[in-house]
Image (cartoon, rainbow, N blue to C red; front, side, top):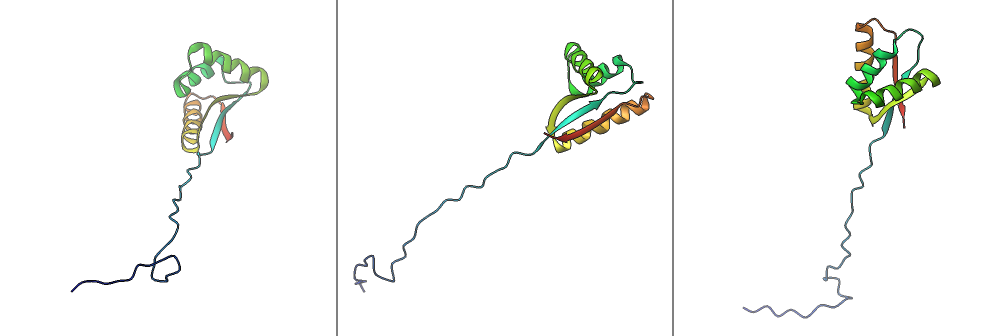
Length: 111
């Protein structure tokens, strides 16, 4: 048996037509957070430099610059990270400071 169908045209309801649309999932960049050190009158400057080198990968020179900024202005940015990384660094700094009997405060805020 042969199939004798009539050709279909644009008005034919049997013709499946449509527009193919491609949706692109937009990925949002994660919010970034600044990790901040707060100045106090008790934590030695040398200890702050050690923290900046140990937890934030700063060179001696970079760490000294940030430490002096914190000392003069009361607050300074250690780095900008995703939420989870910033939160971990804040906790590491506070824990390390407490273990060494220093009241150094570290916090984070949305960039």
